[in-house]
Length: 416
Image (cartoon, rainbow, N blue to C red; front, side, top):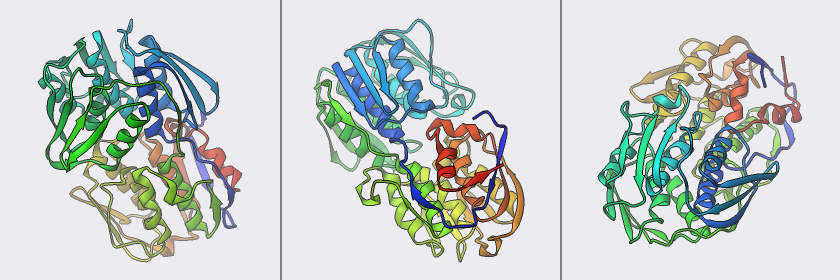
């Protein structure tokens, strides 16, 4: 979509129909990497084709892996099991999963690798991962604490245990978990402190590793142990994206409709599926919502909170400040653009002063998405209940849900 902006027209009817969300971005990028590290041919089905996953696929190709796309939801990956140095820096856009996962993976290859991204990615922290890898004897530099990262890899870690600060992102732990199966001896990862962003994503990582023949387990709340199994090529099916499902669940409750997404909420394994219980309680969502373990669902729930029957305070969301944009700030600005005073930032908490009286009103507001797909998709939900909601840079949804606007249109939502 090349439009500079898009205005959502509130539907005059409940939204009903069937929409199939795209495959999980989180699982797709894990599976792509593991297939690239496995010797042989792997077929990934149900996969997401979006900016983030296509950056991962392109990076693997640049390092000697064959990645074919036989249809819209499949990847066919053939690999020697070894990543070779690319002829130029790996450009990963604003894909945090690809950037962090590959930084660790190439540290066990041989040669020079430069992992880089766009202007937004160059503001996203990676220093805790860099420091952890450096403690393992990896020659690695990230002068700004963010990408670009330069790695001169020798094919091995110098130690079989690492302590890592994962307070900013669980992706740092996932990155080393996946890479360490390529070590020559059992490997342990220990958290520095108890804080970890979205711990449930570690479970996704462990499940994906097991599917590709890895052996890893959590031996205590702060320690994981990985066996030096390497990976085996396999066929792997990817479940729908729970974060994408939250927009459809939100559209359903906001309009009193019924949207069949093809997968019951209870069948998802991704942490953001926990948001279903909160969304289903609308318009009487809890007064305090801890978003720490469902971070990508917070923008969806925060926009719903604008129409809740009572105010909602979001806690445990400090990590949202270092996502694709500062999402706490973006949500605050967008909500206050709809009605001044609708939201306030209190430290790293976000308080949404619910106002169900907004429903049916004309609230002209141009929502700055800060090129963040989740801000664009969440605020589209506000446009289902009030008129005048204009989404700037609507094409940014291509990062994880390229067909989002088509999905809404299939339910009868019109835009101008």
